[in-house]
Length: 234
Image (cartoon, rainbow, N blue to C red; front, top):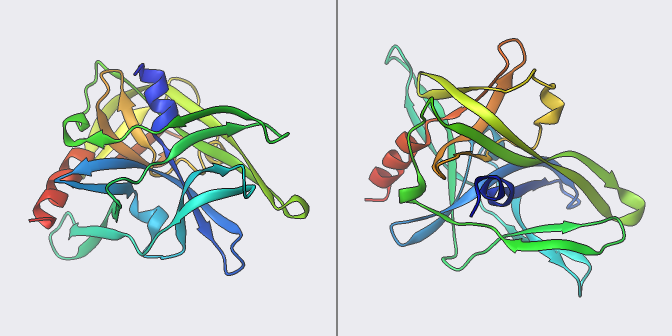
């Protein structure tokens, strides 16, 4: 699969639901096959020890509703602070799903017509890599959610960001420089947890946040998180 297509299709859309079942939180994630199991990965600040999240599968034409997988509380990791005196949450969360679970990129227009339907890729541990300063990176996510209560509808806009370059790692956080001026945080809200993927097809991080002043996007050290997950599953 081409790099841009891998960025476009890999990001699983997560929705947090309120008590009335209306989406009130938005995030992203990706699927990973690891040690004979399938996991949904995202970042800690999206999952936040909540059991009110769901993973979007696709739109069901028969019921005229979005098919979702309701999730239990995500598992998460913790580690010592830099001074070794306190324990802090790691910006990484995971949730086991059925080995045959699938999610789809489903693009529909305002008329309800399907423009594109494609199964999302599922990564393996061989797809996880270390960042390289000579490689371009990118990610995608659904942004600008708009609810239409009278129509019982939700509209989002998918945005694909590419051309990022790895800059540095600080305290197990990977920093990437944007290829142009930071457009403002509202243009990234909904992308947290999306996989950051290189031209070489390697996933190196999950989007955690950004900084307008330094023109950066940052995320977890995914390779280290997977090594810790490996230990957790022993």
